[in-house]
Amino acid sequence: MTDTRTTASPKSSRGADRRELILRSAADLMAERGYSAVSMMQIGAAAGIVGSGVYRHFDSKATILGALLERVIDAMQSGTRDIIAGAEAGPARLDAMIRRQTEIVIENRSLVAVYLRDSGNLPADELRRLRRQQRELIAEWMRVCGAISPGSGDPELRMVVQGVLALINSICTYDNRLPADRIIASITEMASSALRTGVAVP
Image (cartoon, rainbow, N blue to C red; front, side, top):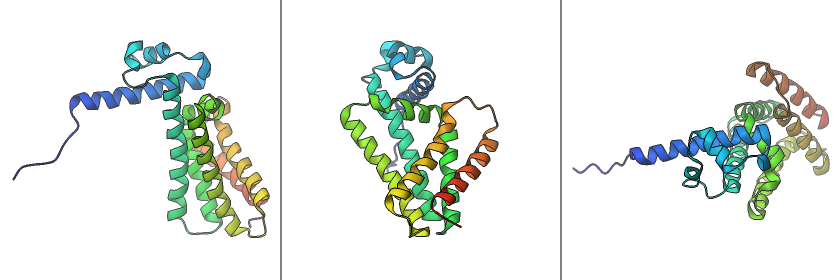
């Protein structure tokens, strides 16, 4: 019998590794300096790749930015949906959503910093797609909150959800030297308290 299984060639594996290295290097540089202050040559140097070699994987700095922001919003959406699918309905589900969102931010601190500050540099079509994904994420949180607090209207739910997500994302706006597990525990407790107060969850 002929074995029809395929495996990635060493060349394709190297390409995927270099693409990942470029993305990680770009995220760190953009988080530190800002999108506008970083060049393709600098990204290549940080990744240990000749500047022109970066163009074999990404045709522009905007393409790199798009890949970075797609990665972070996908992580946030999938993390939220995993909790909704797996956690029992009720206030504990909200606590689990908050904790998972906080973990994602800690795990992707550079990415989230770029997401918060530089998304406006995306091409118009990609920016519209990102904004749509952001609205979908907020809507999912609102649905969970609304099921627990049916007396709250959409404007109130949206205000509270956006405030809580901003609190969680604020981790990336300053240099915090505390251990990750302590940050996660503290931010989860604060954000859960704010959310429960905002939508009158017991």
